[in-house]
Length: 635
Ligand code: WT7
Image (tube, rainbow, N blue to C red; front, side, top):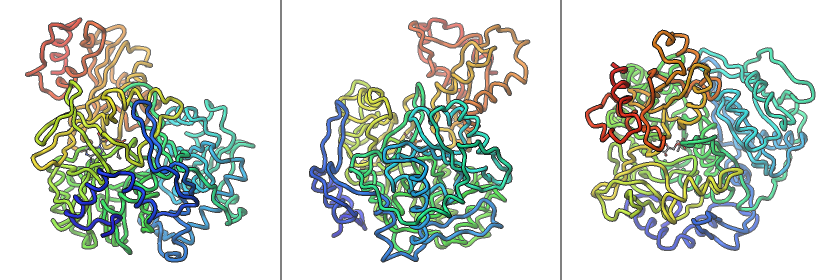
């Protein structure tokens, strides 16, 4: 039996038990037999959640790109590593072999070096889903620079915040990007951001849309000519197991975005091992994850996990509805995709269009379907199962987080019997716990509580960049000696987990994690606004949409004009990005508060959902009369 590739349910249980009984022996074997090391570790694991401090494979030396690229050159040199599918179906797809990827990454790595980037430097990557994005990520890893990819839908303000937080020396971007029928001027967004980023020394610009752009002398350079001149030989920087590999920002319920820091060896082992088993990838399968590399899903399951396994991974530049809603299925047919991994919001949007688009395409290559990002509702699950998988392709509902680095609770395709809306069982090595409000672990099945993890796993984030205290406070303080996920979950009679959603003030809109605080801050910048509170409410396609309760400085209905709504959404777009715009705005006389001045979001949430039957005891509020006026105002 190979512990690396689990093939049926019984084997899952056996390997799971092993991984929990003796985690160090288990992970040592996986690491030793399936990866390339320059030097083995001195110690598999040391940990202390009270600090918190976690170290995996301490003392080991490696470079993750040797695992993603070099080691495949003899056996898979001509195999396609990346299929690039452009935004427009009229533009030809690009097949990049492992050999070609090798050349591109090493040239790019030399360009970074030639521009004064060294091990440990932070490099911000703000690119659309073009091959340069994956190549830039790997080039950073090759030379030990820490990449910080920022999703290219974020505004210039959001970009500047992220660049400054981890003090990036360089930004890699493009002249622009294609998004369906639209183009976006990425370079001008970068230019705006950099007005507030004094420490950025250089900007590399990939050409994508051939637009006229502004190039700042001594700071900006076109990437392509530099790549042409660069040598394609590049020795890897030899990294320590615990050296940071990347930073990726995620929203918190309060405050600025959190720069989650992921380390090299543990992240590599776990992302590769989960990829293999969750999706049951076998050569020569073609695997496609529709996420953007700007999110953790793209890092772990477009780039690192698949490439570590020598897989063929599809990178799609476009959107699901361009030129029409058949685009995904056209791509599945064209590249004979075997594993397809997407988000519930995309499934719901496609389901709404009916099945005529599906019927035009041959989807018989599909073996496994995946979903991630938010709870999937039963209707969407069945639509996916019936119409895309034709009831023959198991759906892996994968629960995890930016912080966890890899998939945590999930079926293994063909091993774990699936159950709609359930993420099912913990992955190998993962020890979940459900906690009650008093901090007790709920034993047995058929319980409902706050989801924690009791034992370290290799790919957990090690800290928040520049703020270890915040890391401790956010994840390790709610429950002693446990990692707290921020999600609620229930466990059914056979031990399957169903994630019920966030229990904090993070709202997931179309699979994007949004903190309420930065959105409220943006709204409060409007000169007419006194205060605001954002809650989520159910939305047919987005899962959740945003409802804003806004109190104006000088109340009086006359002042609430249409422009005000537009101006508020514009502020949000400028500060965060269009994904955080409000679907509904209600102008209120005040916001319900506790006597200590805390906004009662629970009540606001109920009102937004249209459920005012059970608001609980409002008499202890500072201003109970406000609740009635808000309910009235909503009508
Ligand atoms: C939050 C993490 C992990 C990559 C994408 C999101 C929610 C994620 C599921 C799922 C129910 C899910 C959780 C989690 N979530 N996957 N399969 N079922 N909820 O990463 O932006 O860090 O968001 O997404 O609430 O905490 P992220």
